[in-house]
Image 1 (cartoon, rainbow, N blue to C red):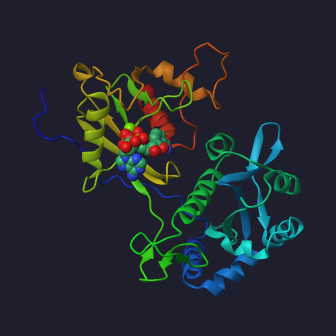
Image 2 (cartoon, protein in one colour; image 1 turned 135 degrees about the vertical axis):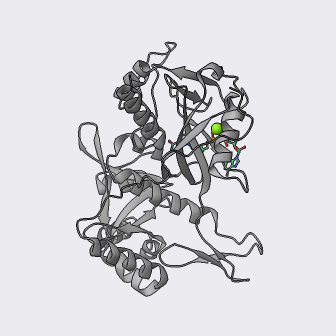
Length: 346
Ligand SMILES: NC(=O)C1=CN([C@@H]2O[C@H](COP(=O)(O)OP(=O)(O)OC[C@H]3O[C@@H](n4cnc5c(N)ncnc54)[C@H](O)[C@@H]3O)[C@@H](O)[C@H]2O)C=CC1
Ligand SMILES: [Mg+2]
């Protein structure tokens, strides 16, 4: 059937998305109100910093702590620990005030992140018993809620490092204590941290799913198709355009799956969907300028790839086994959902 008009169907539009309820709803509300206050009240935020926990970064690489062979955790420090490190390494204690507020733990402890890129990396690592690891690698090592926390911490620090000046006046901007905004000292314009909206889509023909790779991806890794939204586009329009541009296919239906903040390249807001194409109109016509390869994968191939929890190693010259993004990446969630759905309908 030739699709002449936009036939993108959002299936089950009224199906509710269940949120993980906290054990005590009122404590969730009070935590959110507390965070709101810290963003508005610089003095309260400075007090909170003294009793909060800090995640350290060095030139945007997070500090992790090895806990057992191959197992790492985010290394969280107290303000007093950080002051001690700054003092021993001859750095002004005021550096602590460049921390940014990230959140609040379930036990009501405010969480901050701080970049100590001005200090010698090895010296900080030795004093903390940790190691600064590139964020992409850290995503393979961290489990549970630590990965989104570290992503948020890094993204906010990066935003401050790249928004020191007003884009209208060229004059310096000044941050509030929480780091939730910056204001131009000349014209008073307020800047807030931004994310670029991206649609990520796992296309299926009912039997197989379509994954692609860019030449910059690590060897052997394939992911779902993704693309930035153009100004004025809806999610559906971006999805339809990106699939057409990148692989020359026309999608027939889509279903929303979830969303995620992704700290690369400068903070993206990923909107994840499943989409279908007709099996008799599934021939890929690759846009070689954007993608190195795009292929249909069977359920068996996907199940094998999902078993690999870390990037496979291959000897020089040998082809690398096919693998998919780490479990924290929303692409992984889409692939897992597709595999479970396809298996249950076999
Ligand atoms: N969390 C996840 O599971 C995954 C996340 N991603 C992310 O999705 C993002 C978008 O995917 P791509 O295929 O690269 O997008 P894309 O297909 O739109 O192509 C990227 C190109 O779009 C242009 N562009 C337009 N607006 C842009 C903006 N705001 N920022 C940067 N470039 C912009 C640039 O020319 C850039 O080279 C990537 O940055 C990647 O990090 C991609 C796959 C999986
Ligand atoms: Mg793309």
